[in-house]
Amino acid sequence: MKFIETLKSVWRITELKDRIILTVGLLLVFRFGAQIVLPGVNPTQLEGLAGSAEGGGLLSILNAFTGGAFANASIFALGIMPYISASIVVQLMGIAIPYLQKLQKEGASGQKKITQITRWLTIAICMVQAPSYLLSLPTLSGINGGLSTLLVPGFSVTTFMFSSVIILITGCIFAMWLGEKITDKGIGNGISLLIMVGIIATLPLSFAQEFDSAVNQSQGGLIKILIELVVWLVIILLSIMLVMGVRKIAVQYARRTASGGYEKNIFGSRQYIPLKLNASGVMPIIFAQAIMFVPGLIGGLDFMKDSTIGQWLQTNFGNDIFGLWYNVLFGLLIIVFTYFYTAITVPTNKMADDLKRSGGFIPGIRPGSETSEYLDKIMSQITLPGSVFLAMIAVFPAVIFHIMNIQQGWALFFGGTSLLIMVGVAIDTMQQVNSYLLNKHYDGLMKTGKNRKQ
Image (tube, rainbow, N blue to C red; front, side, top):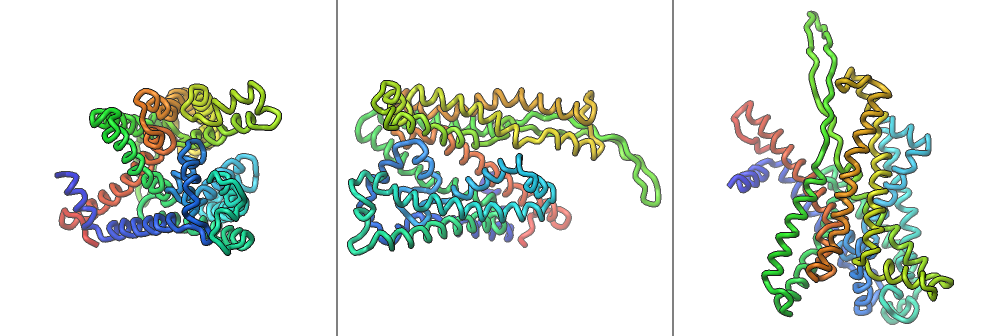
């Protein structure tokens, strides 16, 4: 009943209702575009492409992030990933390039320039990825022949390449625009919501395939499905704990005197610095997943593919994402990248300087360099269990795949990037909705004690 009352409260607040409707509408536009095939492509030739995208690894992630647009060769085939890649590159370049460091310190105006740089870099990445994607379509589709074998009769390869590159770049920019509009005018983080909706779009089909395998093909029956759902809910709860987990560092603010025609004492107050258990989010998994293609590519080189080592690399890293050695290396890379990404995204020196300027200090720790060292030490201590926990969730799909013999597509939802993104975005969106409810209730309490309708 409380949940139903909350939904009614959401619908009563006109501003929040309009934001939610706008968000849903723009997400539907994105999903509709994911089904529109590039002009000139023969859809009947794309069955092999879908099989390659469901085979696991980076292609599965790209297909999931685009909601199946990658496997459909649609106008949104590149999805929002070029923008994500550009954002990561700009963020990493901000460590070494003084100009970007200066922009980061200029507040809103600097952030606006950084956003423009990210957009132009997105276009540059699209100009590389779009032709690469189009030229790889025959190979990914398992068709012997050139690009012309995928096209409808009478459609030239030159015309197709020229028009499709423009369409793919435009589709990525349009998806980026949708995400920014959702962030500004809707509810939640638009880019994250586009990714989450793409992931959720593949969930019903994956579950239907598992249900058909378990029930109709007598491979466990309904009991197996029930057990899988229980395990899935437990993993979701553990993922929520990982996303929400924080270590609170007590901060004391010195006693001050304020004057405004009279003097009064403002006593020191105690607050907290929340250091997240997993400050790097899903970025370590994305980095590690991209690098996991390297051993298989090395094993497939001409001078390596016939050797014992080359065949071992192809077998364990090129074809089987649920294999033992693949997931051992995958987990170790996640732990390493968690430390790396946390070190560059949690500026303990800046946090210590901000505390010192505002008159705050950690009890028992001197302001300045000692505070920075203390915060860095705490981050190192909590990053270890956080990184191990993240690695365990990332490799759990392989564990559940071998223990319960479930479908590969359904297994991918038991952890890894997909589940953590869904949990993180859902929590962030719910917090924003809740903040609207609290604000409206507080304003209305001063008048009628009820939520305002305007």
